[in-house]
Length: 263
Image (cartoon, rainbow, N blue to C red; front, side, top):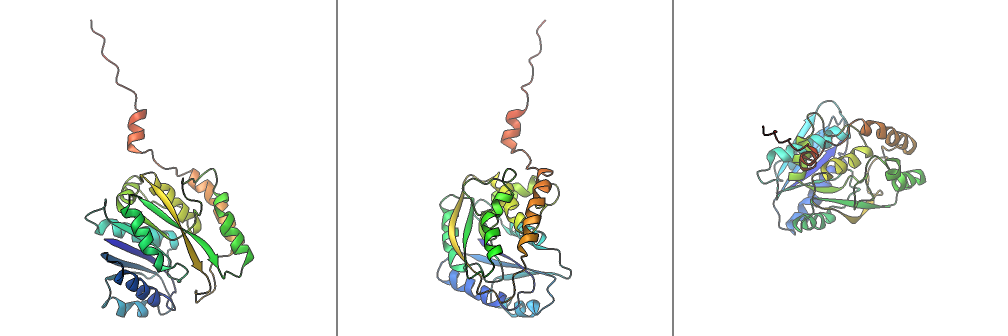
C-alpha cells in the first residue's frame, strides 16, 4: 500500500485537481494506494472541495478546526499511515504539497526506488517560474544553514517537501521519540524528518524533480528572510533534541559484564 500524505491549508483552488492527477497516475501504475489529506484549519472552501472526492477516491480527510502548522500536519499524516499499515516493511508513505508545485508524475519513480531497496527517497526540486530571486537563493542555500546539525548522506535538497518513506523506518523513528518526532516547523521540519527517519533507513536516495511555481494558485507563504532566520534558529532546537542512539549502536556501547572472581 502506498499512502499519499498531503498537508493542506487553504488550497481549495488546487487540491481537487491534484487528487485527480494522482488518481490518473495510479490508473496507469498498478499499485494499491490510499490518499490521506489533512485540512489544517482552512478558512476557504477546501473542506467543500474535498467532500465529493471522498465518495469516488480512496480518500481519508482529517479535519482540524484550528491551524496547528506544517510540521504537526506532516507528523499526524505519517502517524496515521503507520497506524493503518499491516505491512510496514513493504508499505510506504509519500509526502507532497497540495499547492500543485510537486509533479505527481514523479510518484512511480519514487515507488520503484523503494521497491528496489531504498527506504527513503527525496525528490530534489529544480524550481521553475519562481519570480522571487530571494526565494531561489534561499532554496539553494537552505541546507547550508543546517550544516553541522543535520546531515543526510545522499540528499542535498534537505528542505524538499516531496519524498517517500518506507513505513518500517518511519515507525522505528516514531517509536524512538516519546513525544513529537518533529520539533521544528516549515522547511526545517522536512530536513528533520529525513534526518530522524534516516537513522533507521538502510538506504537513502534522491531523484530529480521539477517544482512548478507557476501552477500555484495563491501567493507563496514563504518570506525568504524570515525563513532563513527560522532555519538558523532551528539549529539550536535540533541540537537540544538529538536523535536517540540506534538500538544496535547503543548495545555496542554498553560495557561488557565483568566476570566474577573465582575464589
